[in-house]
Image 1: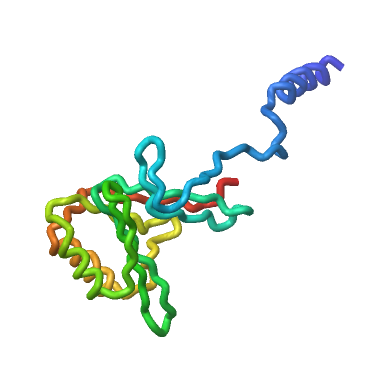
Image 2: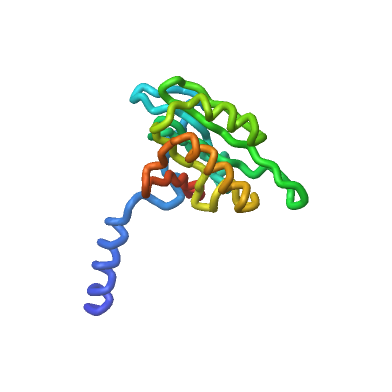
Amino acid sequence: MRMILLFLVPLTLLLACQEEPMAKEKQRDIFQGQIGDTLADGAFVFHIFESGKDVPPERLPVYIQEDYGFIVFDIGTKEEAAFLIKLGCPAAGWIKEFSDLVSLREFVREIPANRTIGYYGITCGGPTHYELPDSLVKEIFEIFKTQGLVEIEGHHQTTCSCPAT
């Protein structure tokens, strides 16, 4: 009998100290802003990813931390490569989209040299340009470099799009 009590007392205390039941879903802050918004703290909403498996999907905002930011999206098929480049400037509050390198080059020529630029197309699931040919991705990055835009060494923005639950 004494042996049973020695077992039951610690078990009862252990159960009494547990956190709230697991069935309660943890509360998350739901981002309500829109692309192009400047928030109260000055953060510029450049893009919004959505988590892949949450129902409903969690909205994951991307904020540019440099003078300019860009994302390269693969929007093509396996048979035909196609891309969309999203370029933003928080100070001016604009976001532009390009689907060809000629118009991107022309636009980038107007950006002053020695400004910082960051690439924001990396998620925990991989880059947004995943299926594009490496040569095309290098050419896109080279357009910014040739204009004199500076990528901060070692600074890469990664957005985690894993489910929160």
